[in-house]
Structures are given as structure tokens and as C-alpha cells.
Length: 369
Ligand code: GAL
Image (cartoon, rainbow, N blue to C red):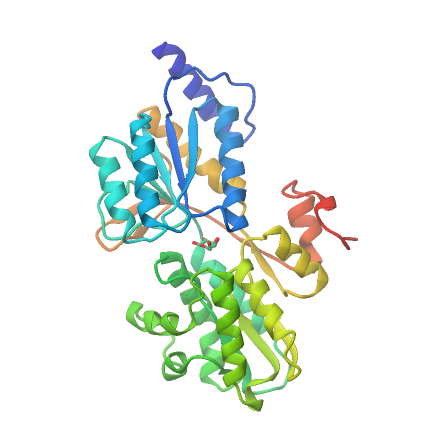
């Protein structure tokens, strides 16, 4: 039984390294790999779930995916449920970077290897590995898109800033990447921040400290919640004078918030045009991009991230040291990490990046040529 399991694992590893995963029989009691994701309410995480189930299932690993539904308490219970089911490896995308430390310390104490998935868990030794997209590059791509598409020859172009949840380490990385890209044009007066006095006060500082970022994010956070994003956009536009209307640029951190912010801006008669960013290639946002309601989104290929995490889990289950290519500082340690590139998606390359690659079906959308 043990031998057979080992060969299953080896076959799984080989299979995964070729990313063609099929035809391996499962032969294990209990759950080997436990996965905890933040919420079912954002389509992003359903994409990840689908990838995990496909890849782990095909590779013959018993696995269970649980959702925390926005609650660190539920997340902790989920981890305990998986520990009771006998997992050897925990793949966890934290609801709250700091609060998750207690749950992963419990897992570590039970002898489980912990892989932080997509979002880093901070302030604890109990994170063995981190598998992530290049989040600084996400923010930089959003900022660069706005610069490449801003109205030509104008100055003091209104720039509205929005960010993710302050409990998510990625929200800082996205913002940092965007800020470093946009800041020179804010400092030279091409752009004018329209909705954050904290950002305005820091406009001459190219590299922000974490405390600076916290001040700005404190004002412009969406909490990754489209209702929060909507009401923040509404109150920003209510407070904005005529000089903050016209042709505007909007840094929106992800697709859900981008759609709700865009829906608010489009109804303001004093907004002549807007460019708005996004992230995650959620189907609804890809449709918005095709329809010209959202300017861009960032493709994070969840097939790759899930495959990298599974390959890591397989190596661990085989007693090997998993492959990593960088490290991330979580405040107490440099966590060995595996990082994946991102890709900008606009109307012009939806077909090539998302359809031709098999990520989505053309029939998922209307108006695709
Ligand atoms: C981030 C994640 C993004 C986005 C966001 C909102 O941590 O990297 O892809 O989904 O959370 O859930």
C-alpha cells in the first residue's frame, strides 16, 4: 500500500511537471491535501477551486477545498476540520494575513507542511512555502496601463485611487507596484489625485514605507467588497469639484470593485471619459472589457498557480525539497516562494490570451469577434 502510494505520488509529480494530468488512480485513505480559500462570493476563488479539484483529482490525490466566507474564525475551523481529516499538506489563502497565523501554527504543531497560497501569511514562522503571482507586477501593469492611455497633452488629469483590503498583504503589493509607476507623473503635475488627501500629501515620495501605504489604503480601501467600492466611488464623486471630473483615470484593484466603481462613474454627467483597471479576468469583467465598460484586467492563470502548489505538495509528500525561485519577507522570516508572471488583458487580446489558451470558451461571452 505504501509502495503503491509512492508510485502514485511519483507518477503524479512527473505528470504535473508536464502539466498533463490524467489517468492516475487514487489509493489513499483520508485527505492528503487540504485547501482553504477566502470566499465563494468572489468568482476569482471559484476559478482556483476548479483548478485544484481538476489537478489534484487527476493526479490521484485525496483533497478537500473549504471556504472561509470572509471570516478568520471559519478559516480556523476549516483548518481544524482538515487536520482532523489527516491532511499532510495545507494550502491556504488567508482571509487576514495576520489573523491566519494562529491557524497555521496549529497545523504546524500537528506536523503539517503549510503552503501560503496567493496571499502571504505574516508574523509567523509557521509558513513553509509561498506560491504566488507577481503582485508588484500586477500593480505596475495597472499603473502603466493608465499612463499609456491617459489623455494626451493634458495636465492635472484627475486620478482616483482605490485599493484592496488592508488585511490582505497583496493589497499593499498591488498598491506599491501601481504607486511606483504612477508617482513620477503625479509629482510632475500630469496627474492629480482626486480622492485621497493622504496620497496627495505623499505625492513626492516615490518609494512609500508600509506606514505610508497604510495611511493611503486606510482612505481608499474597498475591503475587496463591491458594495464598499460602490459607496466609496459615490461619495468621492459627490465630494469632487469640477476640476476632478472630465476625463479621469481610475486605479481599481480588482475586477469586482472595478465593475462597481465603473458603474458609478458612468452615470455621472460630468465624467466625460474614464480609464479603469481591474484584475482576475472574472468572466463578468471580461465581458465589461469587450463592451468597453472596463478598460483592462490582469490575467492570473490559476491553472499555473494551482499546478505549482500541487507540484509543491507532491514534492513534500515525497520527502523532497520543493522547487522555489524567490523569497518573500513575512515580517519574521524569508519564506521560500514560487512566483508566476501575470499578463494584461484588453479588448485586443481577449481572444488570444483567454480563449485560444483554453481558459474560457468563446461562448462564455457576447460580442467577441
Ligand atoms: C487578492 C488576490 C486577487 C483578488 C483579491 C480579492 O489577494 O490576489 O487576485 O482576488 O485578493 O479577492
